[in-house]
Length: 411
Ligand code: SR1
Ligand code: MG
Image (cartoon, rainbow, N blue to C red; front, side, top):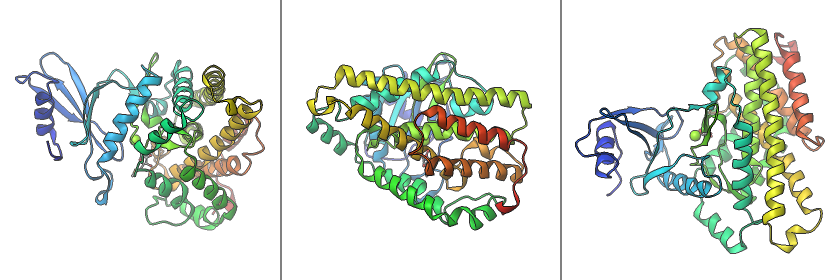
C-alpha cells in the first residue's frame, strides 16, 4: 500500500483492513497527540470498548507544518527501537500490535490507564515505582546495545540501522539555537532582556555546548532513546512505559539520563512560580530531588551489575576501565542535563511545567533561575563527584530563589 496521510475515517478503515477490529465494528476515533511531531489516534470499538493507539507520520513536523519537511522513516526507526527496547526491558515499553513502514504507522496497545508523566508531575503526582523502572530501562538498553556487550560488527550494523535524520533537530534545537537570538527560538518577552544582555553573551557556555554537540555527533556508544523527557513517559502508581522513540540512534550513553535529569530539575524549579501552597510545593520539590538521586544511583548500580555479569571483552574488564567509563558518563549526563534545561527555557520546544505559569514576569523569574542553575551545572560538571552534590546545588538554588524578585542586573 503506497503512503497516504490518514485522517479519522481512513484510520478507522485501515485498522479494520489490518484485522485489528472486525470489519463491521463501529469505531470512535480521536486524535490525542499532543507531541510536536506526529499524529496519534485512539481507535475504540463503541460496542465493547476495545481500543488501540495508532501513531502516524505526515511528511512534515506537525507543530510547524509543511514548511518543515521531515522523513517518514522516523516511524520505522521508532518501531525498530521499540522492538529492541522490548527485548531488554519487556514491560517498560508499549507493545506493538501492528506496523507498516511504507504507511509510516505503528499500532500499539492503548495505555489509557496511565498518564503522561509530565502532566502528572504538573499536578504534583508521585510515582512510587518510577526510579526503579526507569533505572532498569536505561541500564539495560544502554548497556546491552553497546560495545560492552555486543560484538563489534553487530554494534556497527545497529548504528547503520539507526541512521536517524531526526538527529539534526536535536543538534540544532539543543546545542546551537538557544545560544543566540535565533528566529526559531520562542522567548518569553519578560525573559528577552536577560537573554540579550546576559545569556547570549556567555561565550564560556557556548564553548561547553560546542563540546557536548561534538560528543552528540560523534560518540556512538549505544542505542539511546534520544528524547527521554517526562513527556515521553507514561506512568501510574505501579507501571512505567517509555514511548516516543522516534529520535533513537546510536549515540552517547549519557544523553538519556541527561535529558531525564534536566527535566526533573526544570520541574523542581518551576514550582517556585506556581500557585500551590508553600507546604505542597516544598514536599513535592523534595520528592523530585529525591527521585533524581535515586534514579541515578540505581542506574549506575544496575549498569555496573550488567557490566560485571555480561561483559566478555577482555579489554573492557581491565581494572579501572569501568570506573573511567562511568565517571565520563556522569560528567556528560550533567552537561546534557544543562543543555536540556537551557533549550526548554527559550528554544523552540518548551516544557508545560514552566509555560503553564501564566504571569509572564513570574515565568521569567523561574526561567532565569533555570538558566542560572543550568549554567552552574554545565560549567562545574567536572567538579561534582556524585549526583547528591548536584542535587544539593539545585536544592539550594531553588529554595533560595523561592518568592524572590529578579535581581537588578538581570535586565
Ligand atoms: C520540532 S520537534 C521539537 C522537539 O519535540 C520533540 O519532542 C523533541 O524534544 C524535539 O526537540
Ligand atoms: Mg516526543
